[in-house]
Image (tube, rainbow, N blue to C red):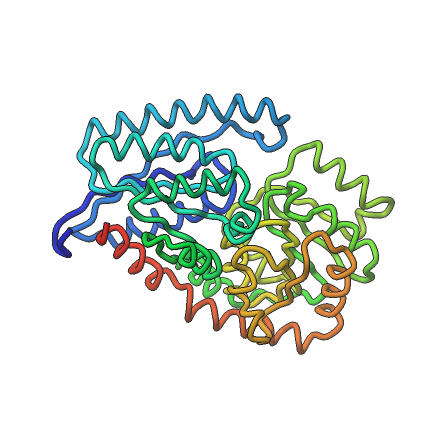
Amino acid sequence: MTKDKKINVLLCSPYQGAVGGISRWTGHILAYYEIHKSYNLKLVHYYEAIESGIFEFSKLRRLIVGLKNYIKIYKGILNKLNSENYDVVHFCTSASISLIKDVVFLKAVKNRGIKTIIHFHFGRIPDLYTKRNWEQKLLHKTIKLADKVVVIDQMSYNVLANEGYKNIELLPNPLTPKVLELIEQNKFIKREVRKIVFVGHCIYTKGIYELIEACKELENFNLKMIGAVSDYTRARLLEKAGKNSSDWLEIAGEQDYDTTIKEMLSAGIFVLPTYTEGFPNVILESMACACPIVTTNVGAIPEMLDIENGENYGICIEPKNVQQLKESLQKMLDNRDFALQCGKNAQKRVIEMYSMPIVWRKLESIWKKN
């Protein structure tokens, strides 16, 4: 496609009514597009929300609910393609069993002669190409079907490039400009040295139970957990925290975006002891808020915090390691000069490398190159 030709892009990605990093990425992209529309690009979004609370369902029920939802999405995509001409259809996925759905969707769009992009919002690709399991086989099929494949971290890009794939593009997640606006509006918020903040969907794969175990051994602090939480999970967290947990633990539940950023600005430590991630928005946001960060070495997180080069942008530990988690939190609590320097370094890095204008230009070029 020529640079000046107007292109129509259909973005099929979770958004309103969905939780998780892909939904937040979608919201940031759509918000930026609305402000910075150009004459040669039209972006249309489509998605049907998955039933609320699906992650707390049994595996069988999740499969049934997911199948019903994917049928609805499939029909909706076809209706969109029938009602308007699109040059590119951009699918976002978190892989796993959803790759079956992605294969079906890609085939349907390609049969109409429309270019396709599959955007992998997860960081497990190197692991999958080591295991060579069923998920890797589906991933391979998906990559071969798509015209372009977008990955979010350098390691995934390197692995796929070394496998001989020629259609791979690297695109980090962006820091939404709204974060910087909120930081400027709330620049007088003081950081509470002994306040630890967790932000994320409160499910076990975010390391929430290890976090409680680690914090039980700390003194003179408080932990605030922000994010969607079921009654069942809340009860389990309180049970694991034990007696007198009300002295140090607050399970705040889901909060609006402005409130969440204000909490990050006041945090003495931001913690995300997650088992698996792609390119988490909450790490970008906590970096922008100059938070001292304790997190895990999964997905793109070590790349985001430049752990390999030994710079002090935060602390990365092994997932599920309660002892490392406790020691890292203790270090941030006790060594405040180190903690605050990590926060300042991270803030500078995120603005220089992951600001929205930089990432948007790359995304737009991917659409136009297709």
